[in-house]
Image 1: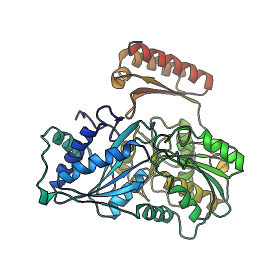
Image 2 (image 1 turned 120 degrees about the horizontal axis):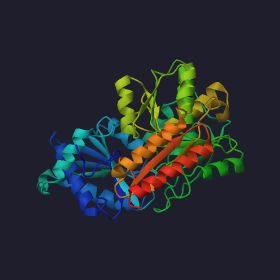
Image 3 (image 1 turned 30 degrees about the horizontal axis):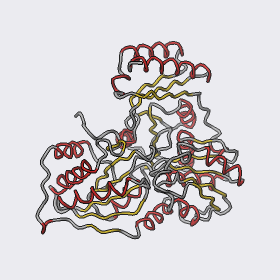
Image 4 (image 1 turned 180 degrees about the vertical axis):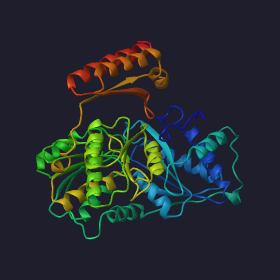
Length: 446
């Protein structure tokens, strides 16, 4: 089904420009409520990150939901995976997150979890889009929903995060830099690691509504790297604005991305008999990850980019671990969605249990050089699928002679085409990615 509003990760856009406007979000809240109300008298949780626009969007979503007869529980700024967890444990019918993840502060978005803490299935999104086409009519006063704030949401989530490592495991003796990107983890992540015994230096914990992801967090791990070297930390941990991604830094300030972290978690789980099945990556996952897992005897499969597609393959295979190079990792044995804090804890647990540094743990993965270029366009799908771009990509793959890959895809979260070239030699992949980017720009009209 062609969707007008929902993308691969909910609805997202620039604040003040359709669809992220007050009037649309009011109608969206009402449409969500009408779809849910068909099953009875539902309860919906609303969480958000630290963007200044989150309060505006929260208020109109709340009004729309209440007007459809839905009860609402409002959460303080809190990570996306916390909303998934609380939706499930508080018996809510759905959870809504107001966030644009790793995007700049002037973007925002809305994503929805079902009662089990999973991303809303396609048929529910389709039903909401159909409901949006109907006239907005409020229920009568006696049937209006009620709204309450939950004061202990962060505390509940902190305890959950700590419960995902074995009882008795502690982080005493580890010096950790935690970069919260001035985002949703700022009041949660440092406490999780501190309460497990780590010596924590926290940065990116002063949100002002406009500084989320700005020069910090998982999209700018150099901030954590510099602080790790400055304070002599053992490891750095960088989250994105809504806390579902994590990138780490070793003691030398070297960035450890999602592919490296997947390898560490998978190998540690395999050696301890905890890993069920194999690992799901994406078409963007480095070939070095696939080869390293193969050496360990761990199956590997690629999905389309997007956590919903990773989750689809995990469930189809009965596996439990997957993720993306960006650091959006899914540990299905522990939670239902990508969770940066939970994923980081699995890596720290491996360090403690195996008595090794982060660098020693990812030493077994040897990644091929990759070059990625984003080309801005108003129609990413059309540019990515144009004949000239497809032909150019085929020519590059032929030139790589079976020792590399080309991936060209429309972004599901931004108005860009993403071009990735992977091969044996850094200069070659960089040059060929630049050539493909020029072809894509020409296909876009210059």
